[in-house]
Amino acid sequence: MQNRRKATLIGLIAIVLWSSIVGLIRGVSENLGATGGAAMIYSVASGLLLLTVGFPRVREFPRAYLVWGSLLFVAYELCLSLSIGYANSGRQAIEVGMVNYLWPAFTILCAILFNRQKSSLLIVPGFLTAVLGICWVLGGEQGLDPAGMVRNIQNNPLSYGLAFAGAVIWASYCTVTNRIANGKNGITLFFMLTALALWGKYLLSGESSIVMTGSGLIYLALAASAMGFGYAAWNVGILHGNVTLLAGASYFIPVFSAALAASVLRAPLSASFWQGAALVCAGSILCWFATRGRPSGPSPS
Image 1 (tube, rainbow, N blue to C red):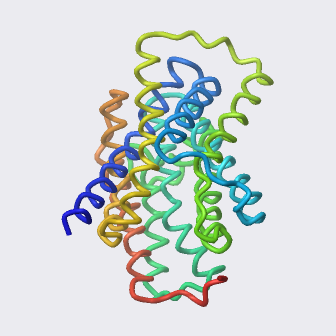
Image 2: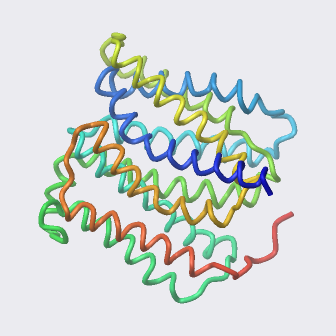
């Protein structure tokens, strides 16, 4: 029982670490550049994962998982890091991060459509509530304001587009790997591939040279640690802790993330933003309840 509590606590620490990622990635990009900074984050995080998780036995991986897992994971991490790095301001980076947090609702929807996960009709209001929350966030000070939301997106369509694409890609990754991973964990390899992809983009993009500063190094160390140790801690929590408690707590990451990012980036957030963030959490939780106690279809294994 004591070991289970410790594992659960470690899993909860992972949630805190992940919640800090938006603000820390933005801090790195402001100091080291969007692409170069992201490449540095994933390079250092890869080293931390090698020390904590180790390098996987790739030969034992199902080929489909190796190919699709790599492609989807790398694509998601590129979308996440660059969407935040390309944001025009700290406030916009937080909004972009909130769009990315549509992935829990998308993941459950994909599980229902493709993995034959059983669900109740709660899935409909849950999904719509999550989408409504994002619209509320993007509406600005007025809350639900379609015209304001359109203007906001037009201000930086690349960042918002990447964040939305990332949410869909991560949902696809979760759905696909659930079927084909066969219990394997390629997180260290995937992080290394992400770092390589970002370095390739950095070399081809002509981005200015990386200039190391004291604040840049601090943000880099914190961001890489949050990513690397976050995955390692979550693995311990899921394997040995209270999975139900961890799953429920994970749906509050959007609120935790916005609070931490607002503090790190010194970007005050309006009441309408918090209302939208609460709706995103509520929608994700409703989607979760829609599948609680309803086993999915036969496992591919």
